[in-house]
Length: 308
Image (cartoon, rainbow, N blue to C red):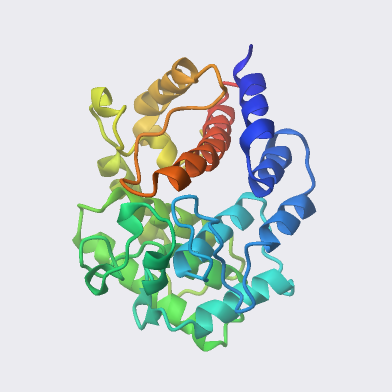
């Protein structure tokens, strides 16, 4: 059975409605409205997202992280209608949530600890802004990209986003050693900015491109014997030959295509490389959600690199 056919069977048997809708959008000419409808059930009255939209975090309450996951799905379907209630709700949440500081939004929130979650999403005061106690840009870089793409230029939220992007550029200029998830967020930020009409000249886009390009090149694990572990591979940062990052990483990117094609399981999914370390019953369910997402990402990568 072909790669896509096996993947389709897994998706229809195991995926959540929102992931099935995304699958249909990408591979079966599905309607964008199906995705928006399914996604709307994860949005709270405050405009943020929760309810386990991020498979490894089952907190029902709105969090910047889960909201960034929703934004990622909106980005996939290229939906940025600033007059839409869902978009306005997100902007309202980002403006009003208490889980933010001047330099960004929290990575973790206290109520994470009240719900089933992977151990790395457990909240502590020390790691609320970054995994290692530092002020990081996961998920802040995604959030500010979305804000700049959708918010009115005169709003305080937009001005905050501009200031944070300027901070990101300074960080990238000064620091060549960036954590892989943060690099991925910077890639999303760059996508948002490049897709924004009338981008303010307050952002040095060319410098940002250069710094993110370097971060991606340095961030990809070059030792492919380690790729069975949880490490950064090309697909974490780009999924098309048209990407700014492809030419620098072409050999590894093409190798990953071969690896993806070779390692698909008979079920149609790919194995995951992590464990929650707790909540075994909930983790068993989350595996199916994560694998569904992983299937979509892998097939988009193969499609973008012209392998399917």
